[in-house]
Length: 65
Image 1: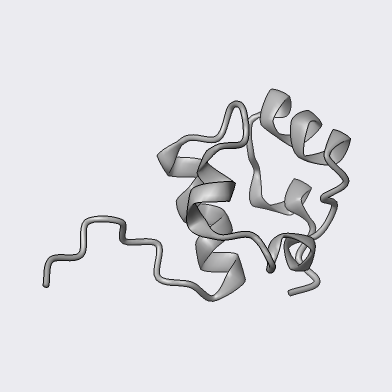
Image 2: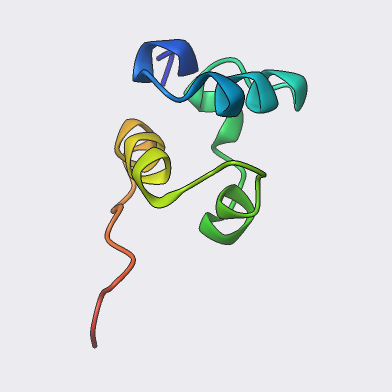
């Protein structure tokens, strides 16, 4: 979880927003829920899936039960 957010090749405006919020490595976002991550301005599905994979979470939002 020491992966830097800049290593994930996110869009520059999203990376700037995450850095402004105080997130520099993926581990900083561990406490956030999926909903909270997706509420970050500029966060889209593609970027969320990259971050979720780095966090070790299941990035599939369309699970059916």
